[in-house]
Amino acid sequence: MRTATTADLKPIVTMIAARQRWLTERGKRSYGRATALLGLLGQAAETATVVGLFHATDDRDAQVLGCSVLFPTAGAAPGWTAVERSERTWLLTMSHTHPGFRSDRIGWLMTMWACDYAARQPDPPAWMRCQVPGPLIAHYRDQLGWQVVRTRQDPDLGEAVLMQRRPESSPGLSALITSRMPVEVP
Image (cartoon, rainbow, N blue to C red; front, side):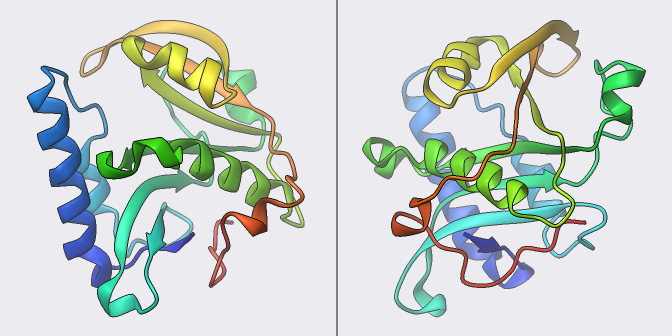
């Protein structure tokens, strides 16, 4: 995993297009807010950090297996209570994974990496949080280890489920996935 930059735009667009095509062919909808994710590439880390899981021996030929956005604060995230927003939280959102690598559990790897990375920070957040559309709740809960906090109505997603999990170190994860350069999330 590493911070994605504007130089990664083309392979990220290619991966997102493949994902959207795969979903459309199956009569499903994309919830990842691709345009918003692409607009966050190159933002200051205090705002948001786009992180990507890349596979390549050379960055020039890097294939993006997945990407997400880390927000270093819950800020004004809708649906969270004032008490929850006051807790040190990182939001993980706008996740996309390449459909050609479904059997490799890319979403699980990215979730495990984000939680491990957060846990290893000098001042780790108390929570990793996300909001997912209702149809994805079972996947996030049962396959990715997120806990349901509450359900709310969202103008874009319809039924949206607020979920959270504690950051936790995952010894041995580096055998599966590494961070080549530091991801800067305050």
